[in-house]
Image 1: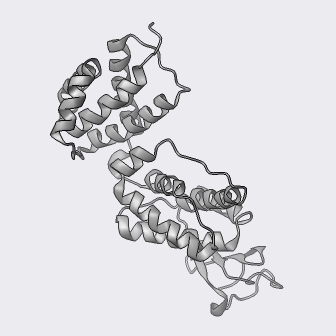
Image 2 (image 1 turned 180 degrees about the vertical axis):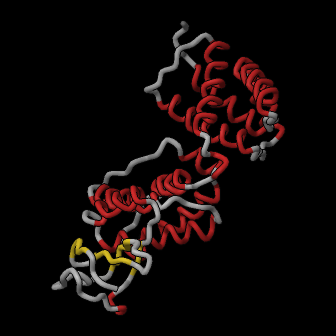
Image 3 (image 1 turned 180 degrees about the horizontal axis):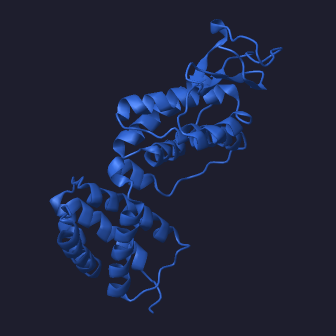
Length: 280
């Protein structure tokens, strides 16, 4: 391999046999080197081969700012996620996750802990991603010698979730349509306007997005205790009646039957969303 471009002392680029550009990481690999020099195998620690040209250009900009240790551990975390989750994960995660880890280390050094309001949703509906993120924290401690707070588990898990590629979810318009339909049912049932700046609204939209994905992919989820389901049904009757409208609409238009678990948690989110909201 021949050096095509030198980014810094630790990162250079080269071309493979198909003339595709690769990023090559290695401590000191670019030091005292020149374009056209050969890359020795014993200098190579990581090779990044990103298929998407747009993502590749963003990643090249990222490697100029992110320390090599973070790029290396990011690659290991992505490999761990791809192996354990057994899902196709977009190469874009190299950009987003390495950038996140970089800034997280700076926040930790300043004793700034960022709590993610979506922790409950991620833990409950994306347990596999959450578990891998817990392992990622162990890797970060081992490689960077930094104790990341448990709040970062949710943040890292969200990077996995956002990077997961599911061909059946490519119809974003379809997803947005279903979201809007459900939001309209809630809006007109309670005659409210949404406070789009509130945490309740943010949490609800995120929860609803994941629910809509399950509707479209027909990936049902149910682990609700019947006792809890009955308690919620009794104590939040108006919100539950609204969910029954949504259940009927989805069954009729999407052929999807809401589980008790989905009805339970959606009721709780709706209750929080509409509580003390101004009437139209």
